[in-house]
Length: 357
Picture 1 (cartoon, rainbow, N blue to C red):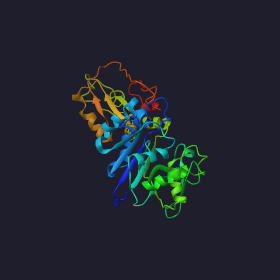
Picture 2 (picture 1 turned 30 degrees about the vertical axis):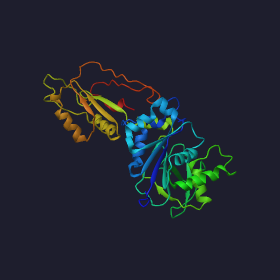
Picture 3 (picture 1 turned 135 degrees about the vertical axis):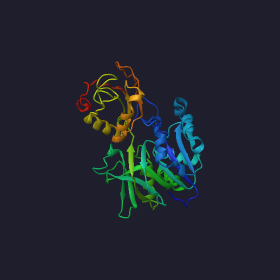
Picture 4 (picture 1 turned 45 degrees about the vertical axis):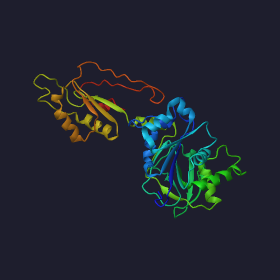
């Protein structure tokens, strides 16, 4: 970010209809498995607190139906501003234009999409675009739907083209541009015959116009991390990476024994190594782990030490459960689709790998 600029504004356009998320609230209001809303994660990845102003543009309809304005103020308080549009605009570029004009934005402007995480460690002083070099190590969904960047050997952007695969570098929806330049270019595009055949004026069209017609210089910045939630399928994949696993202890992770007998909770402790290895993998992938057991707290110290030994992170241990059948009940909805829970009954002391996919 340009530390020399007096005014730096971040705009998050969230006034779309989320057509790729049918029959549910605006996607940026969805709850991530971590408990944070998508918009919260997006703003934090954009380091919004470093800007003088952060403005989220949203629809009046979403405020009335989903309390969008109330929720945003509950999360961010006075650290953000809201621009509420009475009706949808015709394009993303028009949304940005309306935000600049109505919010009286001056100086440097950063535009950031509301449905993806983009993390960057380097912010140049001049105007720039954040992108990603696509290769076998960085696969990207819906590649043909992206905008593509052409740059020279000095990482100066020559052009940016919407949905034309002219390079292996895509734009990630993060643009740093002078606000007055954006307004001027947008107005010229609206009056130009060149763009009359376009169904929608994208932000990339405005940036391309500034580069090719107004000789503005934009630097290319490679992202450190990119997570795309543009479609409901991509969001479901994200959810599946953060499942909650509830494990019994005896007979699943430890060789089974009871409170009484020659082998009991006090003197017998034998981990099922293969199942511990699987548990470790589940933990390392970021899933939430909960243990349920008939053991009381007095007989869990050695098990807790075992978790430390394997470096397995878990949320809690529910001790003293009934020695009986256990049933999981969970609701489902489009945001957490059916089946929203599953159950496995495994043979005592058997190998988990024979049951888990």
